[in-house]
Figure 1 (cartoon, rainbow over the protein chains, first blue to last red):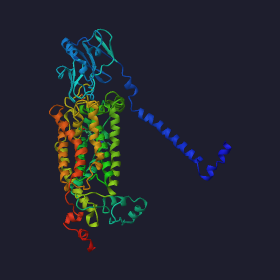
Figure 2: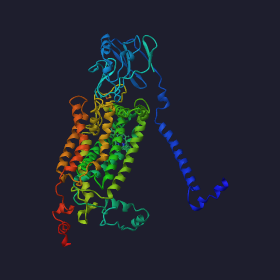
Figure 3: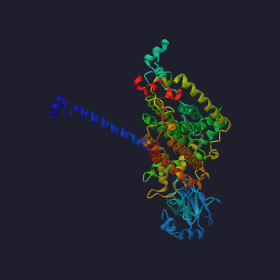
Figure 4: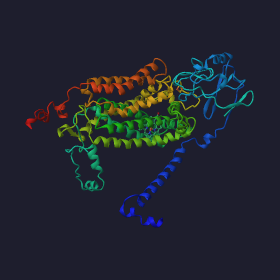
Length: 187
Length: 429
Ligand code: HEM
Ligand code: FES
């Protein structure tokens, strides 16, 4: 074969695939793949760095939160709302027909069994990420008594489900567990 | 490039002759903005704003490079470093106000420049490429200004960054990971601030590069003019220098008076007091709005409050906001009238002024709280905005009967043109 290649008539006549063409394509492909490989670290460096990802879980003492009250805690540098629902608020959340909701979920699905009064959600509006009002003392809670986002007017109900405004989803429920009756561990 | 009667560069001094042989930079300048560049003789002050925009970019680069000498892009000290610029650095207050208000002035100038293009249909052949590059410059400016506003790390900086990167989160499937990638975290923090600073430093130089292409593309057909009639002969033009260097210089003086009036007497007029509160990730200001120059687009974003068929409201708003600018890219092919200038297009002129009013209304709504009646008004105005470009403009340009055009620029200016006489009476030739 090698013998034949060295006397390839195409090399002489300039017809068909010449050795030059092969070398050219091989070299450009090699450089192209190499170039793409270099892009990977350039793009990847933008993603969250190890220290940002290593942000550990957060423990919150909830013993002081009275029914009707809420607090803001911090998890991964973002606010978390921990709210102690009153029986009226629970009843209100349960009487809603889930079929009519934009993001259908029941209160039970959004809380832990037997701890239905503890509504724990991220305090990050699912529209564009503002912190909704309603967790702080005296803040407006909007038309549906839950939370109200002042940025573009999204209203959430007492199960923190989206009811009105541009937000597409209910406030996210982070993964958490009760480590005791008065302490929740988020993350 | 340029017209056959353009004056040729003749270096006088031997040193300049030597330079011209080795690197003809003076020749290049002479042909671009000197006596070697013939320009229509009838340009009005609307043609001043390109030069003013160039001035604004230079102003931003000079003040920006100086600010960068004193600024620190780290979440824990950024706010304090800006206060340090304001209180401690010699003339720091002036340089910072010059930069912040320079951004506003830049947008005022560029908006006038763009609307000049709308009115005189400057986007039409043979100038499509100039227009397309201009839209690219505008997009880059918006990105630059947005990232610059994040740097002082006040409340508006932080929440602006959060909301605007949240726009990308609306894209299906890849949105959420894309937002995290852009920010380098789950919320704006050091990683985001640092990369915004790096890009805010870089992009103005990219803009400068695109401006060079913009002007290169301009110098092929030459400037349009208020009649929209193309240059035919030498008597239609005057050399850029000294005629337009003088006219632009006068315009620059007027611009500087207005700019300095704001800079020295009302430097915070266009800013937002909340940005003097350090960034707090746990509390959103009651009324967050972007800088005024984003208001019309922000109003379009917020106009979508309920789902549209299967597209969620949030995605719809984002698509509409970007489309509001992207539609400009198609303008040269949406307006099919052979006549350029709005002066000779009675119907088009009405549509133009309605669009102007519409954008002002959108701007007002974008700066107002997200409540009624502003939401409804923004919905109507957004609808009209797209209607203008996609329906009204194509229809108007096909049904309108334009007013008679002058034969040439010379005739438009002097009332008569020897060439026009020849033209009307070909046997005389
Ligand atoms: C297209 C040109 C530019 C525009 C539209 C622009 C716009 C802005 C805006 C709106 C701000 C926030 C102002 C404030 O509220 O304080 C800002 C801040 C800043 N810019 Fe620029 N800029 C431009 C070019 C540059 C350049 C070329 C540099 C550096 C080389 C630069 C460096 C800075 C720095 C260090 C800050 C933070 C200090 C401060 O807040 O005043 N900028 N820019
Ligand atoms: S961010 Fe909450 S409504 Fe837009």
